[in-house]
Length: 251
Image 1 (tube, rainbow, N blue to C red):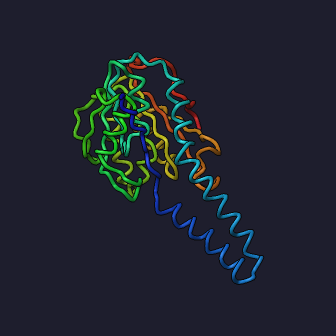
Image 2 (cartoon, helix red, strand yellow):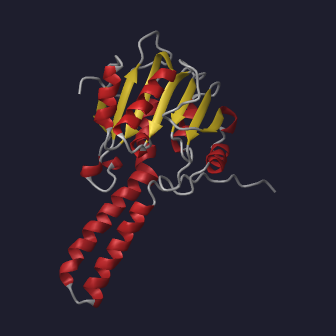
């Protein structure tokens, strides 16, 4: 009897946030029903909508967005790629599928508060489930102190990770490190919330023509006040990856 392939599981981003939202919905419903206070129903509906948007972004929206970003690039197939804050491997495995003769290195400090069930074992299991384990390497490392030589990677990606660094200086250091390990002609792609403008400005101080654009309602983490943006920049030199960055500089 053949073995049924294990399905990949990528967890939920910032799991405490949707939990609190769900508790808020239940509280409002409880007050409306048991407290005979119908004025609380609109609050329950609003919180339920916010929760639905958050879960959509975490469970579907980020996959749709990254699939479009990666398909817009003309991969050679032998690129060396670094994923900053790879978590359970959602983007890691998608990128690995684009480089059948290449390699994707994922680094993380494996914080479970940032993603449920986060850990290298979960990422390795998901890479195996996706059939890309042979092209994936995982390493425990801080993106502010990357243990790689200068110009080591053709592409550097990061998804919903750099914003978890609490200080402006720390985030700037992470951007500096990402740019340092990128080869001439290489491409940097960052999908994140809150600090996208900071990343763009920092990259421009490094001499990069960094672009920035929104990724639409599918990546609203509860509403338009918590939207997601793509920051992209190509390092000067002969392009190591065909196609243009999926974000036009100038904003």
